[in-house]
Image (cartoon, rainbow, N blue to C red; front, side):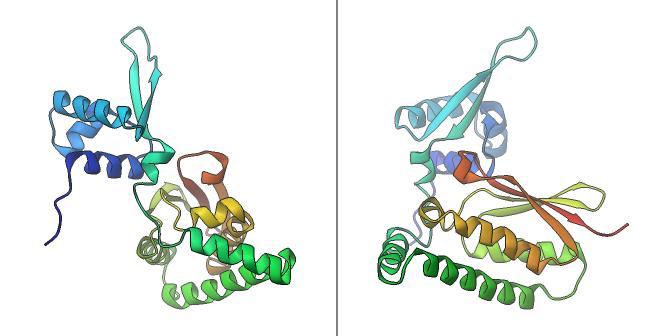
Length: 210
């Protein structure tokens, strides 16, 4: 029997997908009264799972923006973890760090080929939609948004290999290369990076269409 999702868990999940949000917005989205949502937010803050920032807007009362702490993000397990990091550390000690970097690069080249097969030759919108679905299936919690003419923003609110990326940040560079390889008619630029302390990984994807 599936365990029901608690209101607090729904709030945490919402903040994972929307890195910063006001209490009123969370309440509206989850269809909970503002009074109840503030009680839950206070409890989550006490537990160390969320934090908030006070922002002054005009002459009115300050606005409070809530977001997950690192401890809060850890409530959402990823597929990989300590074993992967330990394995790479052992491999580095055995064959050398440069060879490990080469292994990681080969892995992303292989992954790029697999992605390319799934994406096919459709329009950029179709390919990006398939890419987001693939990333979601791997635990990245990805989204795609139109930015402007011929531009899109790819956001990933959770990194499925965050522990590996912390110890071996070169995999993030490999990921950027992979996106460029599977979207050869686009220019891909990183806009946000979890490893820099930001709340999401983001990429600007610009097509070459006129």
